[in-house]
Picture 1 (cartoon, helix red, strand yellow):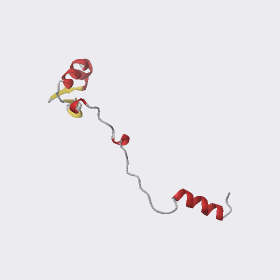
Picture 2 (cartoon, helix red, strand yellow):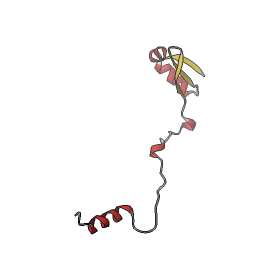
Picture 3 (cartoon, rainbow, N blue to C red):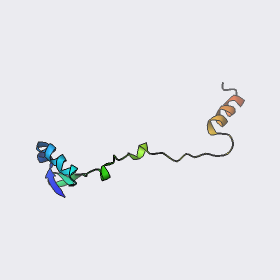
Picture 4 (tube, one colour):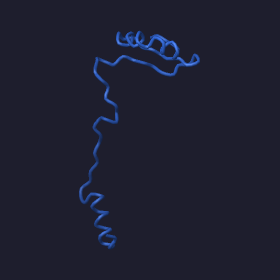
Length: 79
């Protein structure tokens, strides 16, 4: 693990990213405090963000909610 200031990282970004490609972990420091960690991608596979993963779909038996609302509004002559 290598620690480096943000300004040094900015000046040497190409070399630092080469180190990450070789498996090195970088910790970026701002005013001497760690603010970020740069890690190599595991097994060379891109990480899929959680928001792109399939999600759980809920369902209930019977009328779905939108259909129930439309029927209720139709019964109240709102259309």
